[in-house]
Image 1: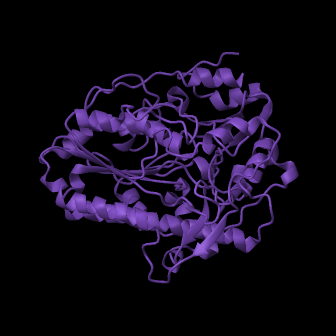
Image 2: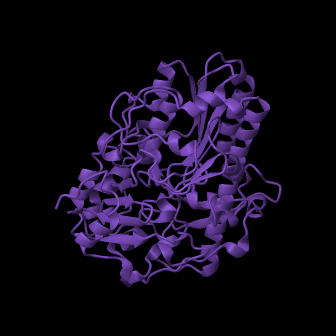
Image 3: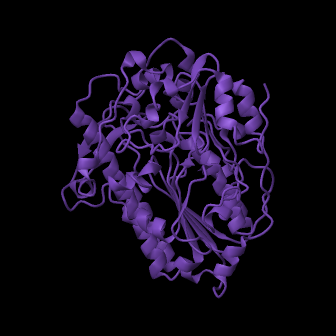
Amino acid sequence: MCTVLIAVLISQTTLFVTGMNENVVLALNGTKNLKPNIVLVMTDSFDGRLTIDPGNKVVQLPYATYMREHGAVFLNAYTNSPICCPSRAAMWSGKFIHLTESWNNYKCLDENYTTWMDLLQRDGYYTKKLGKQDYISGGHSVSNRVEAWIRDSELLLRQEGRPVTNLTGNASTVRVMSKDWSTIDRATQWIRETAPGLTQPFSLYIGLNLPHPYQTEGLGENAGGSTFQTSPYWLKKVNGDLITVPKWLPLSKMHPVDYYSTYTKNCSGLFTEQEIKDIRGFYYAMCAEADAMLGKILLALQESGLESSTVLLFSSDHGELAMEHRQFYKMSMYEGSVHIPLLATGPGITPKVQQPQPVSLVDLYPTLLELAGIPLPGRVSGHSLLPLLSQAATPGGSLHPPWVLSEFHGCDVNASAYMLRTEQWKYIAYADGHSVAPQLFGLENCLLHHMKLPDCHIGRPADYILNDQVAIAHAVFEDTDRWFQVIV
């Protein structure tokens, strides 16, 4: 039944853009371009809960806060696949990953795939990409593909290094991730020196590696990142009193997919409470450094006189578990892994909008095309977010469906995973929906963050996880009849 539900759901209608959003046109009156400039800052592994209350209290993120105060924040933004390459493929294509066969970090989009930026360029935009892109097939080791193939075997292989921390520099060391700072330097120089002289609108993509964990030395060139590294300067931005130690289920009581991932991610051994708090604190500090890079982009737009004519978006490919559920990294449908930041400022965007509508990365494709007044070339999985950005939340006032879909088919798990997320519910199905038990989480009145309700995203309470699939279907889909029909 699960397979039928998901198949029906993901074949839904597509929004076709007919012209530029009226609020954007009005906001741009008096500027030299009637089409807005677009800047997208895309981080890697940024937990979106840190940009909203109460997560924003654990670490100082002044520039995400600035965007929240001067623009809109999506409270329930999600990745379409909790791993680097497939999630970015969804963002660039506007399609769910099964539609583009972006199955894992090795197999994603073809090099000549037409992205939303290609369409902007054809329409007269000046386009530029800087930093990490990571959506083309072959960019990662072939082991990412092999590991996904062998997950059905009985073998348990440790595929990641044990998560560790590394303190570098001193209290004045700001530039820890030098590669990202180099990208930011090039971006701000371009904004200040080149962008003001353009005669056409521009679209600038800035890809960062932070706050993704660093590669651990000694594990080989193809090893993933398992080192959380920062300096004392950034650790000062973290409120140590609010760093919590997640509650873990005993290994014997874990969901079978969680047990497999805990083992392959090298987290099944013993960790002291201080080790766990250090990993989480270092991760938050890495987020603070990424936020400072966002601040440099904001400052460059302001000093160049481009802020009022530029739509700025801040997001991430996926989140980071940071030892929640006895795991680090992503590759999971739990909140730390799939909840991403999505903030937007610029012409036509109402300040201080906190939008509860669940949205995802595939929505950026139709949103950016509508900003530019470009019709969609065909059917996509996403829906434009402009109606949600230009006004406060209005129940029933958006064409966006009341759900988002995320799926994962890569390494470090022993079954494909699918997540359906509505405002009140999260349903996770594995494999064929029958051979591995699905999970249902009630999210109403749930803050989804360890600092307030430690057990919340583990299940509220444990027996709240249902195995009766008919009951699950009725619970999840009771308010979504206008979007699809359940076929039993």
